[in-house]
Length: 452
Image (cartoon, rainbow, N blue to C red; front, side):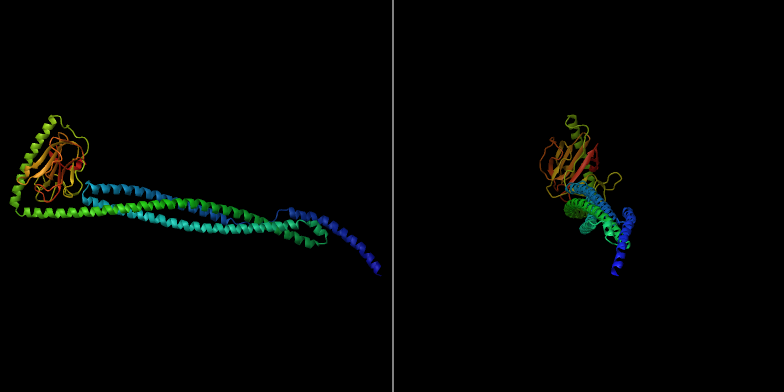
């Protein structure tokens, strides 16, 4: 009974194999079509990391450009400040302005330095922010390297598995007895794996691009940052130097202001005592004015004689230099000091500029010329001043009064601009050691500042 049953199964098995074979012929093209057909669109790989890296790069470039602009601005400000401080130092070393005006300039310099300090601090702050941002990007770069390594390892593993899976063809697997449902499940699994492999490969490529962008950003920004840091250090050195120079100028200015204040106080005290006897002062002023006119006429004759002999030119070309460094205690022109004589519309008039310095300070020729007079100014009466007068042309002379009675030069001698012609003294009607500097043009005393 078993034989018929068994005999009946063999034909059935043969028919089953033939059935599977023909079914495979029908299924294989379908499966091949599935494999060959484009896979369903995988989830796109996000480009957020790359976009963020590129945005960070642009942001850094803008910050670096702003820092370079600040450094350029600092350079211009430092150069301008250097020139202003040098000019102020010249003013304090010589006399090119009164102390009140110089004080205003020094205060303005202090404001300029404060502005430069603020710009410098802004630069330092921005540089610190840039360093912090670069450190963050470097951290991102390190993390991205780790991610890239992990993604590469995953992709390599999946490729290895795919290669091993391909060692047994899908047809062999099907013919080995797998059902049609099993084949579809296998195919679906492999198609899903292929889609994931593709997404992973794209992620690796995206990671590489992001890493390259981050690395380029760091390398470029770090080089720029190091250069900016060096330039910032140079700006700090310049700023420190300007501060030191300004402090020296301020100290010298305070010293000059104190000396000028003391001198003015002495002058006011003495002239106050003189003004107590107004009648006597008026007679003294009148006598002095008459004597000065006589002296001026004498000097005019001496100048004319030098011109007629061809010793001086008819015109003077050039400027006059300040004859001595120090502080201006009285300007040229109308004054409130009652001891000065009247002139024109001024009740009291000062026909020169008074300069105060340490007793014995050398006095120098304001310009090249010929000495026409050295000696006592007897126009001052019983207490004359020692005076030097230089003719620069037939129409221009400079007068230097209250000098010490010394002879560094002689009448008739040719002198050069800046040559020592005397020393600050206290001779004549003087309230303290100072130089009374006058400029006579065409017979009239004019403001010496017009020629400096």
